[in-house]
Image 1 (cartoon, helix red, strand yellow):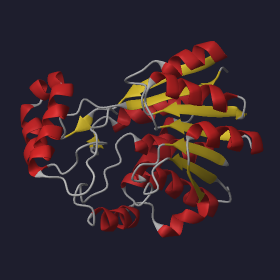
Image 2 (tube, one colour; image 1 turned 90 degrees about the vertical axis):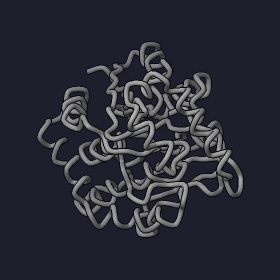
Image 3 (cartoon, one colour; image 1 turned 30 degrees about the horizontal axis):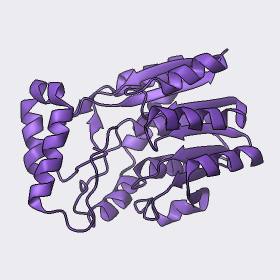
Length: 275
């Protein structure tokens, strides 16, 4: 999603107001459509960027994943419920979130539930995620890998970010499945792609079209035969769609509907080999 610039150190009230007004202007149509939720965002929501929320169309998500990846819908739905009902895991994240005043105190996964169910269904051995940020998405992916391991399927997540503080939310018990690289994805992705086939690639870093497209083009040669490419920015750019068309791959997009938030939502773009 489009991110509001972060402020170093303590964020003064005036600067918080300016940041929130910036968000309201950016998503003006959604603000007008959901005035009460917009007011709640201004007055009560601690988040200034990378908004978190529940989503209202989980049934549509299960149908989308099943249809796009030719999976059993009931199996996809069961994994969505598995994450939603995993109280101990959410509690782990909540404990860490409560130590950060600029974050909600409860972990809300949004579209990342889709990432989780894809990993549980396909059991990838190698995942790359560019743009770790706090580590909410990484935590969800790692929890899926952890459950896969318990069922006899090993997997590893390579998380890439240029911020040394990235990934602070990730539970320590899940880090055995993680290689966290603090460097530019332009350097890290080719190296990983050269060393092992990549089953799942998730773009969530610099969302400029040129950078996003470059990531897809870089990882293409290292994808496993059935490798998937996901984008967290397909609601805003056509980078993944254009990459798919140029590469002879199939592209599909699902748009999330946030619950109790004025933000209009992002989604999941999926690029997969043609059947």
